[in-house]
Image (tube, rainbow, N blue to C red; front, side, top):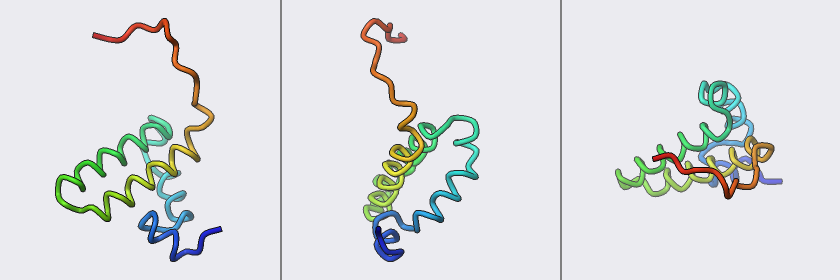
Length: 86
């Protein structure tokens, strides 16, 4: 179990605060955990572009946490016969 200080260093917030924010987000309501993590990764791209490396690292860690805690039930093997949209 991580201390609050360890969580803040890793994620920029505590896991409890992150769970509240994710559970209340419109992205979760309308797009699920995948949409929340995609949005976070877009935020991290912007942070990288602005030279905000530490914030980007924490944002990526938050996105990974969302994937692990909100998307695992969605994991399905890729369909090798699926067509790729053009």
